[in-house]
Picture 1 (cartoon, rainbow, N blue to C red):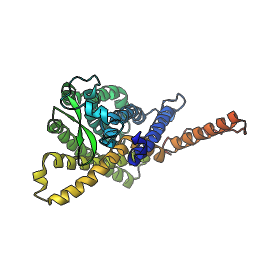
Picture 2: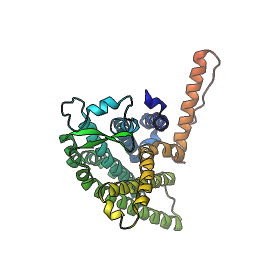
Picture 3: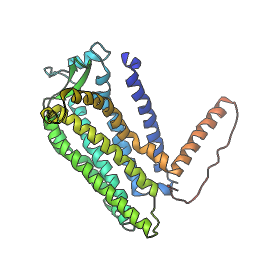
Length: 333
């Protein structure tokens, strides 16, 4: 299979599978019954993000990863040739996967905005925050996932297909609904959410500075920093998405500011960076949680040690004991 010799595909597959394993492990820690420190609203949102991002990652193999790494004569090329614009007699539900490709674009940005909002409420309303999320978390999450269907359902109702790019020698997915129709609602939503995240993070930062000035202790500071890091990734990917949109739909506008060769130069690099930035947005939460949460790091280390000990015991090469350190400190100490 030619994909196995594709360096870019194998690199993304390696860190993707590693991130999925880490994501699943950390989420398991959060769901464990004896982990009282991981019962806050942030961790519940983290668990929701796990299911959303894993589905996003799996869906991307159909809509993005495999087609964009398959040349004209590649292993899956015949499948892509068959699912073309004119062939309507196909059973593979490509429109379903295509719909969720853009559906998750909405939900990921909405979810990250929700995370920023969650952390901001801890700073502005520390005594009322958890009560609010305990009461309204499920309705808010349902609204977050269901609202994008108002626009993305149109993709499902139209014909999705693969098309071959002669210049790039790979396949990409398209729809008879039209990219312009998709981005008509997606791009304003993306921009609004990005601006909203900027406002929330700036207000939270100012509030934190004021609290620090008057000697107040800011609870879960590392968690707030983590949310800000996610926002930075979100903002970077938003900038790339806006540039992609302008190149695809408003080339004449860009030509007012830059020469055509300059636009093509940056477009090539944007196309290279976008998949990696998208992956980082998808998998940033577990990695950042490991970086900023001491207890998560400790539990991960204990889990790895347990696996090593069990492997040694199973092979008869030795025995060992893993000491589990218990305490009542915050998950972010």
